[in-house]
Structures are given as C-alpha cells and as structure tokens.
Length: 265
Image (cartoon, rainbow, N blue to C red; front, side, top):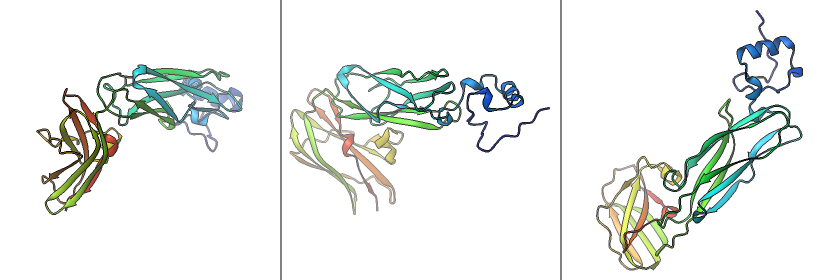
C-alpha cells in the first residue's frame, strides 16, 4: 500500500496543496484522489499560491433607507493557479440580524484561472425606530480549515430622526451601589427613559445574553440632567449600562454608543 512521504509544509487537514498535478508525483496524486476525490476544488484559499481572496473594502457604509447593500469579494495575485473557494457570513455587532439586516451566508467558487469578482447582497431593514448608527461584520473563512481570511465592517446609517440627543452617560461606584448620570443637549417630545444593564462587555458587540431592562417604569425626564441609583448589585461584579429614551408616540431610541460600566464594591 502506498504511504505518502509528506514534504515539509503540506498539511492535509488544511489541504494546503497547489492545485496542479505536475507539482506532485503520480502515486501521491492517486493516493490523494482516493482519500478525497474532490480535493482539487477544496484548496484552502489562504494557501493558494500567489492568490489572495478578500473584500474590496475594509469598511462599507449603507443608508437604512437603501433597503440593501452589495459587497464584492476579489481574487488577486500574480497567479490564478488552481480552483479555490471561500465561505462568507454575517455577524452581529450593534446591528442585529432579523431586525436591522438579514443574516446571510454562502460560498463562492473560482475555477482554475478565474480572477472574476464575486458579489453578494444583504437586505437592510428600513424601520421607523430611531436607533442611531449601527454596525455588523462580514467575514471570509476557509471552507477547509475554518481560518478567518478577511473581514469588513458594515455601518448602517439610520434615517429616523432622534428627538433626544445624549451628550454624556456615566456609571460610577458609590457606597450604596452604582450611580448612573446622563446629560442631554436636546429633548423634544420626550416621555422618559429606561435603563438597561448587562454583566458582559459583549453587549457592545452584539452579545445580549445577560442584558436586562433595569427599570420597570419610565424614568421621567428631569431636564437636561438625570440620575438613577442601582442598588441591586453584587460586590465585585462589573455591570454595563445603556440608556433608552421613549418619545410621546412610544417610539424608542437606544443610545448603545454611550454604554458605560462600573464594578460594585
């Protein structure tokens, strides 16, 4: 039975092989084809000789009212040798799949010698909520190794006007718990505020597993400066806080760009 003597640098798990039969001896090609008949279509893009797969930009901007955004993946380099493929997927940031955009995944394939750009489109939700600017991430990964090959940040610009402009929001530890203070520069038709709390910084990046609404009743607007004391805290735990305002029509605005934290003593 043929047992290959793998040369230095070849890793079958990552399939980092040049897609060219002449690069290897006949016995090795026959053995590899028996082990994995479709290996020629599964060469890991990160190891493809002189070929690079990446997004056409590191950052994309889209207006919420546009309804969709199109993204381009390019193949570049001195050589287009070999067939390659790459997976793409979206990941939540402050924007949430299902409410702000449509979660999207897929796979692109390039044939040997193909250098054509590939594009995919993501639907953007145009709602009536005043949410401010939000972001999510699109990522390219190897379908063989799962390696992250490239990523880009997508920024959604809200087209709904907020009636409250938040200038400052702080969380400070004191002897009774954690004191929350916030200051606004404008408040039009503001019915009041809700406070939200989490015990994980991942909240900033789209992980909402520990997030709760701290206040049951609206905190009435107190002019341009407001305070709230959170006494229901445990010593040594770090809490992250965010502010929501509600207008007279019941519309919410979440000010997640000014999340602050404090550790209870």
